[in-house]
Length: 239
Image 1 (cartoon, rainbow, N blue to C red):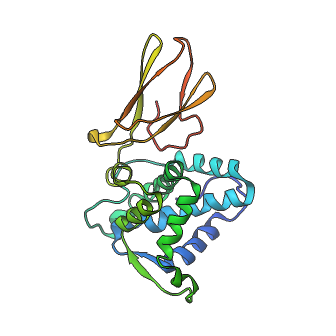
Image 2 (spheres, rainbow, N blue to C red):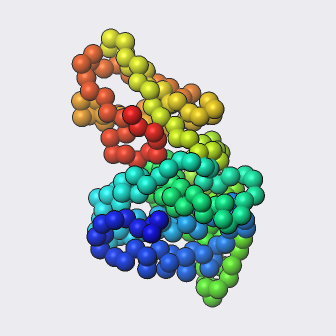
Image 3 (cartoon, helix red, strand yellow):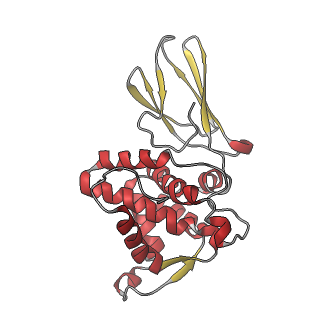
């Protein structure tokens, strides 16, 4: 199955995935097939969240890493053009696994609590709806989730979703070293803006870099080892 990790994770993945649809899908329905990741990506990510609840944060990260190897990056997760169900489900690995990784990376960017709040608001946009019978349904698009996430995080996230769901290729990091200076740069498809902060480890010591303009320079020993995103929290192309 496209959304199943081939390992014993302590629960029935198929059962859990479909239960996620019972909660998520019955409350939130994509208005068009081009936004099918709002079902499948969120449902797949719910499996990782359950692994975390069941066995802790290491299980969560292990689950996400298992999903990472199945991402193909062939087509956009949420194309702007209208597509049929057949067209969207020709790309199941990306609307499932990449969709889940978009949420994983968003959690890194805005924080665990903010992501949880955004996901809950996507299902229950008004507090009074939380107490209604669990049969109400609303139709949504990717832009609805973008708006909610931005409101919760208090920051512009248009650039984030433009790179991760509107086109297929992944960003990657380039490291240029000149003596004690290392220039860390994002290489982004079509030179799209991508001010993603980045954690690096220099000889095992972590540093967080702001890359507001897509790059930053750090001073390091010429022989120092630099590891990019050592905890693998960002969806990126790796060498």
